[in-house]
Image (cartoon, rainbow, N blue to C red):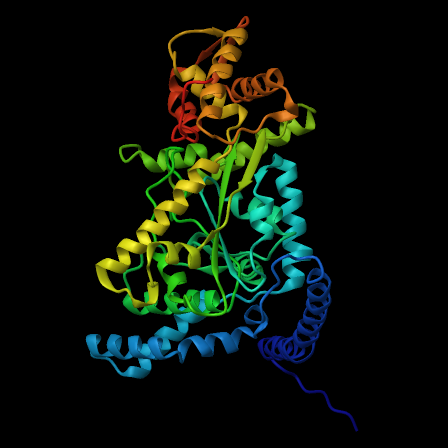
Length: 473
């Protein structure tokens, strides 16, 4: 005999959700993890044959194991104890807070995601938006870096595209681990960034427990030889010029290095520049304390309007890439040799003396980065036109001014990228970019700066304003 049983709809739905969750948790997710790990192992075996700087075993440790190792580090434990005593709370609560910080910071590097997804996206996006070029490379210096050394790329920070372009161009040499700000902690994006080996950093955090957890992670990664990339400026430039550097992360790296250890710590200066920075107007607005701040809706509308205008140009066949993006790789700086030359042992220094020595090294690195910033067509044309901002200039006058400026920069040792080895083309390309963006008006063959766009032209001229200029021979 059969009987029917009636169940409430909500109970059926709840049972279905639980069954689906059990299927996902017990069958689909483990299968997906196994597939990704197997693919990652294959990719890792493949890239190890061509990478100059190999991924370290530290990067292949399970994320939870790294989190546990970080939380139970002696210095983190001591910091948690002091944190609990200062706030009169149980030590277990402080340890839970330390674990939350560790989960926030520690990446989950996956070779498959880095080389098959991240590299592909980075390459496609970079080449779609810019004519990406490597201008100068100290190949001999880079080849001389010991395979066991911990390598850190030190660079200026002009755009969020820096992460993408630098990783794409360095992918034939090393896997880069970045410090990424809180802006990227968005569901979906943060998982991708962690899988790319990046770790999240809270800018300007004054929480001593957080700072200790972050310090110990960076020190551990440095000690293990993980290749990293760092922006001493701490954030995007607001006016186009190099920002005053901060050396907290640099200090953390030095705490993970020993002058008598097996690994040297080698910093590679890297300079980037663009003919067009996607965030230029946003950064100018952020640097103007008197300007009204647009709300979220207005900012989103502006972004959509920009995307729409670019799409219309693309459909009409009139869209052009945003000029050149260029990267220069400089001469590596060995901390072991630097310390030997100055008679400094960083691990023996504390307080003001350590701060002074770290700052001296940091200033030297940033000076090298500044000298490596590429000179591109748009900054050159902007610099020449700003010399006479109220006057209209012919293209011939602009080319003559660019020629004189280039001579001064070359005499000062600047790294100038010349597109197609043709100065006429370079100036024409830079001028065309400014006219297309309506920063400069074409008045029948004479070019005049729009007065409202003077700050934006200064933004691009400032990218090379720090470079030394000497009378041309």
